[in-house]
Length: 475
Ligand SMILES: Cc1cc2nc3c(=O)[nH]c(=O)nc-3n(C[C@H](O)[C@H](O)[C@H](O)COP(=O)(O)OP(=O)(O)OC[C@H]3O[C@@H](n4cnc5c(N)ncnc54)[C@H](O)[C@@H]3O)c2cc1C
Ligand SMILES: NC(=O)c1ccc[n+]([C@@H]2O[C@H](COP(=O)([O-])OP(=O)(O)OC[C@H]3O[C@@H](n4cnc5c(N)ncnc54)[C@H](O)[C@@H]3O)[C@@H](O)[C@H]2O)c1
Image (tube, rainbow, N blue to C red; front, side, top):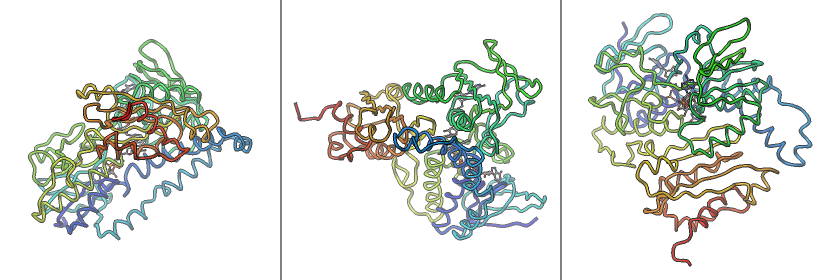
């Protein structure tokens, strides 16, 4: 077997692995990434990019229809075939050549195949032709293997061969009827996408929708789904599944039966830890690999786990943030340079704990960062909630004829800073970064009075929040 020794081995060339490798390489380390499928990973080909491509045409059409004058120009319906073609362009027809060129240009080695630990710092990579290479890491191995969908243990469900998010994001036509299991982000976004593409969608959620979001956001998303024709069934679950001719028949716990030609399972994801040889290191394969804030696995001075596989925040931007810290700390430790691992230091992913931004691309969109009011109260914060109806803003009046949206700020009264924010409405994703900066920077509310939002934009919600909170030192 061919044996190769390098400074750093990164397992998985998803967005996260690419970024760990890039930072380690920039830190002067010889780095190789191992990838068994496509360089670019889930986000580029089967997750963020194709799902947002499938959603965008529907949201653009709704935006035009919501503006008098533009609405009159919309004389046709959405063209699903054109939407799928645009999705294919955006996902480069699942060809990773440009990402491979990028790796090459960055000076990062690529080994195609499946990696498995055979001992500390030692891996065997098996290529698709069966040939093997042993890789030995001088300094570090970063596991960036992502996550896989969970199939609930429902009798008959596996035999239906249901769609997972991969099938739903790579399909080339919309099924006439679609049952979506799971009311998380994947379930809500893909129900929205397929409803706009012409499917009759039923969404079944074991609990409510969008766990962890503010209740008002959940309510508005539910209303939006129902307005789009989605049948939303919450607090129930499928107890039996079988096929009867062309339809899948799903039986719920209250006896309700749902018939659908296609079933999408969106009931969560777990870290991809199986078939990695973790047991060779004394670790068990499980839902995720636990790490400290520098992404290092406890009990090891050379093993890191970054991105979805560590379960800290299964989001591309958060994984890339972890990757920058991990790649830099690997380089620092290899060179014997000081490690900056105090909270908010260069080598830690402190924001994972309480300051994770997320945009859910439903109709309406939900943009959130930090703690909800309930989470802040549970954390012992002296909370004040500031709510505002976005339709009252001049910016909303201009934006659309019947803008619907709300926003909530969660204030830590004792510290006089924001700890959470949620915006719901069309295009609110673009409002999120200001809130993230205010929370991460712990900007005092009295200073925010000097951060003047431009008129007439939706950002004026910041002024309304401040007015409601009151200005210190004034009557
Ligand atoms: C439908 C959907 C939509 C999403 N939309 C968004 C969004 O809009 N915004 C957002 O921030 N997040 C979104 N996410 C989450 C986002 O996709 C993930 O957080 C992100 O892709 C994780 O990146 P990663 O690099 O950790 O894992 P991955 O992208 O999964 O990369 C892991 C890579 O490792 C490779 N690999 C695994 N095991 C081995 C092995 N043993 N040997 C060699 N290679 C291996 C895999 O082939 C893969 O390429 C979405 C997820 C889904 C499912
Ligand atoms: N726009 C975005 O940022 C975006 C988009 C998609 C996915 N993601 C990320 O991908 C990850 C995975 O998303 P997800 O939606 O698959 O997982 P999730 O964990 O967010 O949601 C899964 C949902 O399925 C429900 N569920 C579990 N078992 C069930 C059953 N048997 N029947 C019915 N419902 C059941 C759960 O209660 C939960 O509401 C998330 O961490 C998410 O943040 C992000």
